[in-house]
Image 1 (spheres, helix red, strand yellow):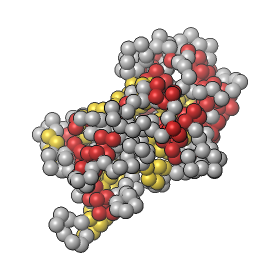
Image 2: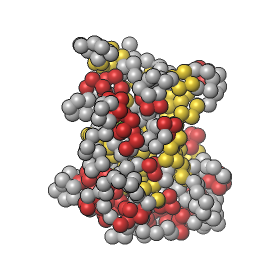
Image 3: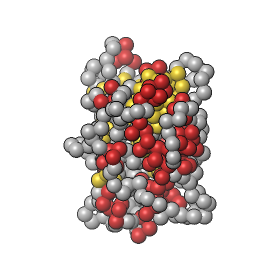
Length: 442
Ligand code: CA
Protein backbone atom coordinates (compact mmCIF):
# COMPACT_ATOMS: atom_id res chain seq x y z
CA UNK A 1 0.00 0.00 0.00
CA UNK A 2 1.23 3.48 -0.81
CA UNK A 3 1.84 5.68 2.19
CA UNK A 4 -0.45 8.67 2.02
CA UNK A 5 2.25 10.93 3.40
CA UNK A 6 4.81 9.91 0.81
CA UNK A 7 4.95 13.00 -1.35
CA UNK A 8 3.14 16.07 -2.41
CA UNK A 9 1.26 15.65 -5.68
CA UNK A 10 -0.63 17.67 -8.28
CA UNK A 11 -3.52 18.35 -5.84
CA UNK A 12 -1.23 20.43 -3.61
CA UNK A 13 0.06 22.69 -6.41
CA UNK A 14 -0.31 26.24 -4.98
CA UNK A 15 -1.06 27.78 -8.40
CA UNK A 16 -4.22 25.70 -8.93
CA UNK A 17 -7.40 27.74 -9.29
CA UNK A 18 -11.03 26.62 -9.28
CA UNK A 19 -13.96 27.60 -11.48
CA UNK A 20 -15.77 28.24 -8.16
CA UNK A 21 -14.67 31.88 -7.89
CA UNK A 22 -14.60 32.25 -4.08
CA UNK A 23 -12.26 29.26 -3.76
CA UNK A 24 -9.54 31.52 -5.22
CA UNK A 25 -10.07 34.33 -2.69
CA UNK A 26 -7.15 35.04 -0.37
CA UNK A 27 -7.66 33.89 3.20
CA UNK A 28 -10.55 31.57 2.38
CA UNK A 29 -10.47 28.24 4.23
CA UNK A 30 -11.55 26.07 1.33
CA UNK A 31 -9.38 26.54 -1.77
CA UNK A 32 -9.10 23.71 -4.27
CA UNK A 33 -6.02 22.39 -2.43
CA UNK A 34 -8.15 21.58 0.66
CA UNK A 35 -11.30 19.64 -0.35
CA UNK A 36 -12.54 18.60 3.14
CA UNK A 37 -15.61 16.41 3.72
CA UNK A 38 -18.80 16.95 5.75
CA UNK A 39 -22.40 15.73 5.79
CA UNK A 40 -25.03 18.39 5.18
CA UNK A 41 -28.50 19.27 3.92
CA UNK A 42 -30.29 22.49 3.08
CA UNK A 43 -31.20 24.39 6.24
CA UNK A 44 -34.78 24.14 7.39
CA UNK A 45 -35.62 21.19 5.14
CA UNK A 46 -36.20 17.50 5.72
CA UNK A 47 -33.79 16.55 2.95
CA UNK A 48 -31.58 13.54 3.62
CA UNK A 49 -28.12 14.35 4.93
CA UNK A 50 -25.42 13.42 2.43
CA UNK A 51 -21.71 13.89 2.00
CA UNK A 52 -20.31 17.10 0.59
CA UNK A 53 -16.95 18.65 -0.24
CA UNK A 54 -16.19 22.29 0.59
CA UNK A 55 -15.00 24.42 -2.31
CA UNK A 56 -14.83 28.17 -1.62
CA UNK A 57 -18.20 29.28 -0.25
CA UNK A 58 -19.97 26.29 -1.83
CA UNK A 59 -20.47 22.60 -1.11
CA UNK A 60 -20.16 20.03 -3.86
CA UNK A 61 -23.11 17.72 -3.13
CA UNK A 62 -21.68 14.19 -3.47
CA UNK A 63 -25.13 12.61 -3.85
CA UNK A 64 -25.87 14.92 -6.78
CA UNK A 65 -22.38 14.39 -8.18
CA UNK A 66 -22.78 10.62 -7.91
CA UNK A 67 -25.90 10.88 -10.08
CA UNK A 68 -23.87 12.42 -12.92
CA UNK A 69 -21.41 10.39 -14.98
CA UNK A 70 -18.54 12.77 -14.18
CA UNK A 71 -16.49 10.40 -12.02
CA UNK A 72 -15.03 7.16 -13.32
CA UNK A 73 -12.48 4.56 -12.30
CA UNK A 74 -11.57 4.26 -8.63
CA UNK A 75 -13.11 7.66 -7.87
CA UNK A 76 -16.62 6.51 -8.87
CA UNK A 77 -17.24 4.07 -5.97
CA UNK A 78 -15.68 6.62 -3.60
CA UNK A 79 -18.14 9.33 -4.73
CA UNK A 80 -21.02 6.89 -4.24
CA UNK A 81 -19.78 5.97 -0.75
CA UNK A 82 -19.44 9.68 0.07
CA UNK A 83 -23.06 10.30 -0.95
CA UNK A 84 -24.42 8.40 2.09
CA UNK A 85 -25.84 10.11 5.19
CA UNK A 86 -22.62 9.43 7.13
CA UNK A 87 -19.06 9.18 5.83
CA UNK A 88 -18.26 5.76 7.39
CA UNK A 89 -18.44 3.92 4.05
CA UNK A 90 -16.05 6.39 2.41
CA UNK A 91 -13.78 6.21 5.46
CA UNK A 92 -13.72 2.40 5.25
CA UNK A 93 -12.46 2.39 1.63
CA UNK A 94 -8.88 3.32 2.57
CA UNK A 95 -6.12 5.54 1.17
CA UNK A 96 -6.06 4.42 -2.51
CA UNK A 97 -9.75 5.33 -2.88
CA UNK A 98 -9.37 8.58 -0.90
CA UNK A 99 -6.43 9.57 -3.11
CA UNK A 100 -8.30 8.72 -6.30
CA UNK A 101 -11.32 10.73 -5.18
CA UNK A 102 -9.20 13.74 -4.18
CA UNK A 103 -7.39 13.70 -7.51
CA UNK A 104 -10.66 13.43 -9.45
CA UNK A 105 -12.28 16.23 -7.42
CA UNK A 106 -9.23 18.43 -7.88
CA UNK A 107 -9.23 17.92 -11.65
CA UNK A 108 -13.00 18.39 -12.00
CA UNK A 109 -13.08 21.60 -9.95
CA UNK A 110 -10.10 23.28 -11.68
CA UNK A 111 -10.48 26.28 -13.91
CA UNK A 112 -11.20 25.11 -17.43
CA UNK A 113 -12.39 21.62 -16.41
CA UNK A 114 -14.86 20.02 -18.81
CA UNK A 115 -16.77 18.73 -15.75
CA UNK A 116 -17.84 22.28 -14.79
CA UNK A 117 -21.02 22.09 -16.85
CA UNK A 118 -22.26 18.98 -15.02
CA UNK A 119 -20.96 19.83 -11.53
CA UNK A 120 -22.08 23.47 -11.37
CA UNK A 121 -25.60 22.12 -10.82
CA UNK A 122 -24.34 20.03 -7.86
CA UNK A 123 -23.27 23.04 -5.75
CA UNK A 124 -25.10 24.17 -2.61
CA UNK A 125 -24.06 27.49 -0.99
CA UNK A 126 -22.60 26.95 2.47
CA UNK A 127 -24.82 29.80 3.70
CA UNK A 128 -27.86 27.63 2.93
CA UNK A 129 -26.55 24.45 4.57
CA UNK A 130 -26.81 22.79 7.97
CA UNK A 131 -24.45 20.02 9.02
CA UNK A 132 -24.59 16.70 10.81
CA UNK A 133 -21.99 14.78 12.80
CA UNK A 134 -19.97 13.47 9.84
CA UNK A 135 -19.73 9.82 10.89
CA UNK A 136 -21.47 7.25 13.05
CA UNK A 137 -18.88 7.41 15.81
CA UNK A 138 -18.73 3.97 17.38
CA UNK A 139 -16.06 4.82 19.91
CA UNK A 140 -14.42 8.02 21.07
CA UNK A 141 -11.04 8.01 22.79
CA UNK A 142 -9.57 11.21 24.19
CA UNK A 143 -5.80 11.43 24.47
CA UNK A 144 -3.65 13.86 26.50
CA UNK A 145 -0.87 14.67 24.05
CA UNK A 146 0.23 18.14 25.21
CA UNK A 147 2.95 17.90 27.82
CA UNK A 148 2.38 21.60 28.54
CA UNK A 149 -1.30 21.00 29.32
CA UNK A 150 -0.49 17.92 31.37
CA UNK A 151 2.06 19.88 33.39
CA UNK A 152 -0.14 22.96 33.88
CA UNK A 153 -3.13 20.87 34.97
CA UNK A 154 -1.04 18.52 37.05
CA UNK A 155 0.45 21.48 38.93
CA UNK A 156 -3.05 22.55 40.01
CA UNK A 157 -4.36 19.10 40.89
CA UNK A 158 -1.08 17.78 42.39
CA UNK A 159 1.33 20.68 43.13
CA UNK A 160 4.01 18.32 44.48
CA UNK A 161 3.82 15.91 41.56
CA UNK A 162 2.58 17.66 38.39
CA UNK A 163 3.70 15.28 35.66
CA UNK A 164 3.18 11.63 36.49
CA UNK A 165 6.13 9.33 35.65
CA UNK A 166 4.30 7.48 32.84
CA UNK A 167 3.60 10.65 30.81
CA UNK A 168 6.77 10.68 28.71
CA UNK A 169 6.44 6.97 27.88
CA UNK A 170 2.75 6.30 27.33
CA UNK A 171 0.35 8.26 25.08
CA UNK A 172 -2.21 8.67 27.88
CA UNK A 173 -5.88 8.41 26.98
CA UNK A 174 -9.29 7.42 28.30
CA UNK A 175 -12.46 6.12 26.73
CA UNK A 176 -14.87 9.03 26.12
CA UNK A 177 -18.54 9.05 25.22
CA UNK A 178 -19.63 9.08 21.56
CA UNK A 179 -23.36 9.74 22.07
CA UNK A 180 -22.96 13.35 23.24
CA UNK A 181 -20.69 14.47 20.39
CA UNK A 182 -22.39 17.23 18.41
CA UNK A 183 -21.47 19.29 15.39
CA UNK A 184 -20.61 23.01 15.37
CA UNK A 185 -23.61 25.03 16.50
CA UNK A 186 -24.20 22.65 19.41
CA UNK A 187 -25.98 24.21 22.40
CA UNK A 188 -25.97 22.37 25.68
CA UNK A 189 -27.14 22.93 29.24
CA UNK A 190 -24.71 23.57 32.04
CA UNK A 191 -24.21 20.19 33.71
CA UNK A 192 -25.25 19.28 37.25
CA UNK A 193 -23.06 17.13 39.41
CA UNK A 194 -21.19 16.45 42.65
CA UNK A 195 -18.45 18.81 43.68
CA UNK A 196 -16.37 19.20 46.81
CA UNK A 197 -16.28 22.88 47.85
CA UNK A 198 -12.89 24.18 49.07
CA UNK A 199 -12.30 23.11 52.67
CA UNK A 200 -15.42 20.92 52.81
CA UNK A 201 -15.37 17.27 53.83
CA UNK A 202 -18.58 16.30 52.03
CA UNK A 203 -19.66 17.03 48.46
CA UNK A 204 -22.60 19.14 47.37
CA UNK A 205 -24.85 18.60 44.37
CA UNK A 206 -25.61 21.42 41.96
CA UNK A 207 -24.68 23.19 38.73
CA UNK A 208 -21.03 23.16 37.71
CA UNK A 209 -19.42 26.49 38.60
CA UNK A 210 -16.19 25.78 36.73
CA UNK A 211 -17.29 25.06 33.19
CA UNK A 212 -14.31 25.07 30.83
CA UNK A 213 -13.23 24.39 27.27
CA UNK A 214 -10.52 22.18 25.84
CA UNK A 215 -8.99 23.16 22.50
CA UNK A 216 -8.36 19.89 20.67
CA UNK A 217 -8.19 18.30 17.25
CA UNK A 218 -10.31 15.26 16.43
CA UNK A 219 -8.80 12.45 14.38
CA UNK A 220 -11.26 10.34 12.36
CA UNK A 221 -10.25 6.73 11.85
CA UNK A 222 -10.64 5.58 8.25
CA UNK A 223 -10.10 1.91 7.56
CA UNK A 224 -10.12 -0.16 10.75
CA UNK A 225 -8.01 -3.04 12.03
CA UNK A 226 -9.18 -6.52 12.98
CA UNK A 227 -9.53 -7.37 16.66
CA UNK A 228 -6.23 -8.85 17.81
CA UNK A 229 -4.16 -7.16 15.08
CA UNK A 230 -2.01 -4.19 15.98
CA UNK A 231 -1.20 -1.38 13.56
CA UNK A 232 2.55 -0.69 13.29
CA UNK A 233 3.87 2.86 12.95
CA UNK A 234 4.62 2.32 9.24
CA UNK A 235 0.91 1.68 8.59
CA UNK A 236 -0.68 3.92 11.20
CA UNK A 237 -1.50 6.91 9.00
CA UNK A 238 -3.11 4.66 6.39
CA UNK A 239 -5.87 4.19 8.98
CA UNK A 240 -6.51 7.94 9.41
CA UNK A 241 -9.13 9.65 7.24
CA UNK A 242 -8.63 13.18 8.46
CA UNK A 243 -8.76 15.79 11.20
CA UNK A 244 -11.40 18.17 12.56
CA UNK A 245 -11.58 20.79 15.31
CA UNK A 246 -12.85 19.57 18.69
CA UNK A 247 -13.95 21.26 21.91
CA UNK A 248 -13.98 18.89 24.88
CA UNK A 249 -16.19 20.87 27.28
CA UNK A 250 -15.11 20.10 30.84
CA UNK A 251 -16.66 20.74 34.26
CA UNK A 252 -13.52 21.24 36.33
CA UNK A 253 -15.21 21.15 39.75
CA UNK A 254 -16.94 17.86 38.93
CA UNK A 255 -13.68 16.54 37.45
CA UNK A 256 -11.58 17.41 40.51
CA UNK A 257 -13.86 15.37 42.78
CA UNK A 258 -14.52 12.38 40.51
CA UNK A 259 -11.28 11.81 38.57
CA UNK A 260 -9.43 9.58 41.00
CA UNK A 261 -8.76 6.73 40.52
CA UNK A 262 -10.24 6.02 37.06
CA UNK A 263 -10.11 9.40 35.31
CA UNK A 264 -12.76 11.80 33.99
CA UNK A 265 -16.35 10.61 33.68
CA UNK A 266 -19.39 12.92 34.06
CA UNK A 267 -17.19 16.01 33.95
CA UNK A 268 -16.61 15.43 30.24
CA UNK A 269 -19.40 13.37 28.69
CA UNK A 270 -22.27 15.89 28.69
CA UNK A 271 -21.12 17.49 25.41
CA UNK A 272 -18.24 17.45 22.92
CA UNK A 273 -18.40 19.71 19.86
CA UNK A 274 -16.62 19.07 16.54
CA UNK A 275 -16.33 21.07 13.34
CA UNK A 276 -18.43 19.76 10.44
CA UNK A 277 -15.47 19.65 8.05
CA UNK A 278 -12.88 16.88 8.11
CA UNK A 279 -9.61 17.92 6.47
CA UNK A 280 -7.89 14.86 5.03
CA UNK A 281 -4.38 13.88 6.00
CA UNK A 282 -3.46 14.15 2.33
CA UNK A 283 -4.57 17.81 2.25
CA UNK A 284 -2.36 18.45 5.30
CA UNK A 285 0.76 16.98 3.65
CA UNK A 286 2.45 20.36 2.95
CA UNK A 287 2.24 21.18 6.66
CA UNK A 288 4.13 18.21 8.06
CA UNK A 289 7.00 19.03 10.38
CA UNK A 290 9.57 16.90 12.22
CA UNK A 291 8.62 15.23 15.49
CA UNK A 292 11.23 16.00 18.10
CA UNK A 293 11.66 15.48 21.81
CA UNK A 294 13.19 18.10 24.12
CA UNK A 295 16.80 17.54 25.15
CA UNK A 296 16.94 15.08 28.04
CA UNK A 297 13.49 13.56 27.47
CA UNK A 298 13.27 9.83 26.72
CA UNK A 299 12.85 8.81 23.08
CA UNK A 300 9.68 6.81 22.33
CA UNK A 301 9.91 3.04 22.76
CA UNK A 302 10.67 1.28 19.46
CA UNK A 303 7.02 0.37 18.75
CA UNK A 304 6.18 4.11 18.86
CA UNK A 305 9.15 5.20 16.77
CA UNK A 306 9.83 5.37 13.05
CA UNK A 307 12.09 7.34 10.76
CA UNK A 308 9.07 8.76 8.92
CA UNK A 309 7.52 9.85 12.21
CA UNK A 310 10.72 11.59 13.26
CA UNK A 311 11.05 13.37 9.91
CA UNK A 312 7.45 14.43 9.37
CA UNK A 313 5.13 13.01 12.04
CA UNK A 314 3.94 16.33 13.44
CA UNK A 315 1.57 18.82 11.81
CA UNK A 316 1.82 22.61 11.94
CA UNK A 317 -1.86 23.53 12.31
CA UNK A 318 -2.53 27.02 13.66
CA UNK A 319 -5.28 27.03 16.28
CA UNK A 320 -7.26 29.85 17.84
CA UNK A 321 -9.97 30.04 20.48
CA UNK A 322 -12.50 32.88 20.55
CA UNK A 323 -14.97 33.73 23.31
CA UNK A 324 -18.24 35.54 22.61
CA UNK A 325 -20.19 36.66 25.68
CA UNK A 326 -23.90 37.62 25.59
CA UNK A 327 -22.90 41.25 26.18
CA UNK A 328 -20.53 41.16 23.19
CA UNK A 329 -23.20 39.47 21.07
CA UNK A 330 -25.81 42.10 22.03
CA UNK A 331 -23.34 44.87 21.13
CA UNK A 332 -22.77 43.32 17.69
CA UNK A 333 -19.13 42.55 18.49
CA UNK A 334 -17.15 39.57 17.26
CA UNK A 335 -15.55 37.00 19.53
CA UNK A 336 -12.40 37.85 21.50
CA UNK A 337 -9.32 35.70 20.95
CA UNK A 338 -8.21 34.07 24.19
CA UNK A 339 -5.64 31.60 22.85
CA UNK A 340 -3.38 31.09 19.83
CA UNK A 341 -1.21 28.01 19.41
CA UNK A 342 -0.17 25.26 17.00
CA UNK A 343 -0.61 21.50 16.89
CA UNK A 344 3.13 21.19 16.26
CA UNK A 345 3.76 21.40 20.04
CA UNK A 346 2.05 18.05 20.74
CA UNK A 347 4.16 15.45 22.58
CA UNK A 348 2.72 12.49 20.63
CA UNK A 349 1.81 12.31 16.94
CA UNK A 350 -1.31 11.02 15.16
CA UNK A 351 0.59 7.88 14.10
CA UNK A 352 1.71 7.22 17.68
CA UNK A 353 -1.88 7.53 18.93
CA UNK A 354 -3.12 4.97 16.39
CA UNK A 355 -0.27 2.55 17.01
CA UNK A 356 -0.50 2.81 20.77
CA UNK A 357 -4.29 2.39 20.71
CA UNK A 358 -4.00 -0.87 18.76
CA UNK A 359 -0.78 -2.31 20.22
CA UNK A 360 -2.75 -4.61 22.52
CA UNK A 361 -4.98 -5.79 19.65
CA UNK A 362 -7.77 -3.25 20.25
CA UNK A 363 -9.73 -2.84 17.03
CA UNK A 364 -10.39 0.63 15.61
CA UNK A 365 -13.35 0.95 13.28
CA UNK A 366 -14.21 3.36 10.44
CA UNK A 367 -15.64 6.53 11.97
CA UNK A 368 -14.04 6.11 15.38
CA UNK A 369 -12.86 9.43 16.79
CA UNK A 370 -9.64 10.14 18.66
CA UNK A 371 -9.27 13.43 20.52
CA UNK A 372 -5.76 14.88 20.68
CA UNK A 373 -6.20 16.20 24.22
CA UNK A 374 -5.94 19.90 25.03
CA UNK A 375 -3.32 21.39 22.73
CA UNK A 376 -1.67 23.93 25.00
CA UNK A 377 1.60 25.34 23.70
CA UNK A 378 4.67 26.17 25.78
CA UNK A 379 3.58 29.64 26.94
CA UNK A 380 0.53 30.64 28.97
CA UNK A 381 -1.15 32.58 26.13
CA UNK A 382 -0.97 29.36 24.14
CA UNK A 383 -2.98 27.43 26.74
CA UNK A 384 -6.09 25.72 25.37
CA UNK A 385 -8.24 25.74 28.51
CA UNK A 386 -9.52 28.41 30.92
CA UNK A 387 -8.19 26.49 33.92
CA UNK A 388 -4.69 27.20 32.55
CA UNK A 389 -5.35 30.67 31.11
CA UNK A 390 -6.70 31.84 34.49
CA UNK A 391 -4.45 29.67 36.71
CA UNK A 392 -7.33 27.74 38.17
CA UNK A 393 -9.64 30.76 38.25
CA UNK A 394 -7.22 32.94 40.25
CA UNK A 395 -6.42 35.41 37.45
CA UNK A 396 -9.50 36.34 35.40
CA UNK A 397 -9.14 37.08 31.71
CA UNK A 398 -9.87 40.71 30.85
CA UNK A 399 -11.89 40.81 27.63
CA UNK A 400 -11.68 43.75 25.17
CA UNK A 401 -15.12 45.06 26.19
CA UNK A 402 -14.08 45.27 29.87
CA UNK A 403 -15.77 42.06 30.99
CA UNK A 404 -13.88 39.43 33.00
CA UNK A 405 -14.04 35.66 32.77
CA UNK A 406 -12.61 32.87 34.82
CA UNK A 407 -14.89 30.02 33.76
CA UNK A 408 -17.77 30.08 31.26
CA UNK A 409 -21.03 31.84 32.09
CA UNK A 410 -24.48 31.01 30.73
CA UNK A 411 -24.89 32.28 27.19
CA UNK A 412 -21.16 32.27 26.44
CA UNK A 413 -20.20 30.87 23.05
CA UNK A 414 -16.76 29.50 22.19
CA UNK A 415 -15.45 29.24 18.65
CA UNK A 416 -12.35 27.28 17.65
CA UNK A 417 -10.69 28.01 14.32
CA UNK A 418 -7.82 26.20 12.65
CA UNK A 419 -5.76 26.77 9.52
CA UNK A 420 -2.41 26.03 7.89
CA UNK A 421 -0.38 28.69 6.15
CA UNK A 422 3.19 29.00 4.88
CA UNK A 423 5.15 30.28 1.91
CA UNK A 424 5.10 27.91 -1.06
CA UNK A 425 1.83 26.18 -0.17
CA UNK A 426 -1.85 27.05 -0.40
CA UNK A 427 -3.44 28.23 2.85
CA UNK A 428 -6.10 25.75 3.96
CA UNK A 429 -8.54 25.98 6.86
CA UNK A 430 -10.87 23.89 8.99
CA UNK A 431 -13.81 26.31 9.17
CA UNK A 432 -15.05 26.67 12.72
CA UNK A 433 -16.25 24.74 15.73
CA UNK A 434 -18.87 26.73 17.67
CA UNK A 435 -20.68 25.79 20.85
CA UNK A 436 -22.90 27.68 23.29
CA UNK A 437 -23.55 27.19 27.01
CA UNK A 438 -27.21 27.28 28.05
CA UNK A 439 -28.37 27.66 31.67
CA UNK A 440 -28.98 24.55 33.75
CA UNK A 441 -32.04 22.70 32.47
CA UNK A 442 -35.05 23.87 34.49
CA1 CA B 1 -9.81 16.42 26.68
